[in-house]
Amino acid sequence: PLGYRYCSTCNIFRPPRSKHCNSCNVCVSKFDHHCPWVGNCIGERNHRFFFVFLLCISAMTVLTTICALCVVVEAFQNVPEDGNDDDDDLSFVQRLWKAILSEKFTFIFGSFTLLCAWSLISLLCFHAMIISVAQTTNERVRGVYRFGQVENDADHGCCWNWYTAACTPCPVSRLPRDMSQQVVCNYVEPEEVWKGDHEDGAAAAGAPSTPSTTAGGESSSNGRIEGIDSTSTVQSPTKSSQDDKAELETGAGDGRPGSEAEESNTS
Image (cartoon, rainbow, N blue to C red; front, side, top):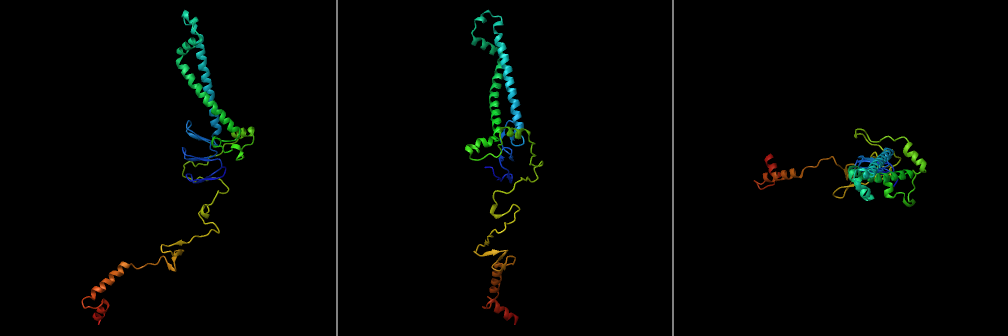
């Protein structure tokens, strides 16, 4: 699973831990996942920024939920002071219900941000975990390193994995700017050679050549079939049959073949 694989869409040998994204229609280096919320793939060049984005938005939703909770608590404490003498006899649930009714929008918005904070914090913890073990979401979901079947060469310990993910220089994109240049992927050797041909189209040394076969079962080589050059012309059978018919019609008047009639006329 960590070898070079050929992508028929991009026409390149993509490097290890890469994958072709059907949404972006490109091969992404160290593919993590495609995020519809940011409209882009998460990979080697932007995973650290995506993690910071998750951290900031999780903190924002938590802060918003806390502010909404403070407003509802303050409204709950002010319920007995609204001017009704019977409010002192209200139960806890009744006072809470009156506080929620007085701050309906705040309560609904705080409930929404609470759900968002729960999901975002869970996603943040998941990405923190896969960074600690030097994996990607795609590899974690597929179970590439499950049960020690494949050794993870990128895992060098928790601290070094965090340093690699956050402090190493961001690699340069291999995509051309105008999308008309050839995309070249640096690799040592492809996984296999197709039918003994090299990448430049030349035949491999020592590869057996397969002679072509004509419709009649005769083998041909270099454009020649059984000693006959393929560039030579062959007389059309239609023209020869028309000439024979004309000769027969010429000799039909005197009962002789066309060749004898011509000899008599000449004499």
